[in-house]
Amino acid sequence: MSLLISLLITVLVIVLVLYLVRMLPVDGNVKNIIQIIVIIIGIISLLRYLAVF
Image (cartoon, rainbow, N blue to C red):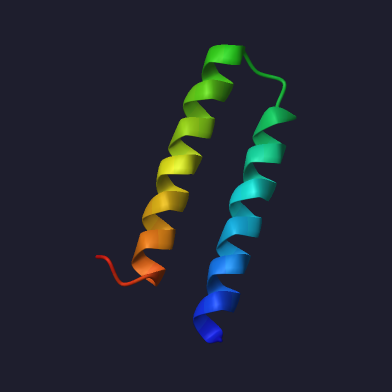
């Protein structure tokens, strides 16, 4: 159950950060780069919770 809650919180944080990045008043290319970095960090976090790493 703890694993499921951790995964849910991680997904919610990723979605929140992606939403906040979209609201930033910066160039579109910078937003895309930041979104890709956030997604990669999120995937790595999820894989760590699933004990892949």
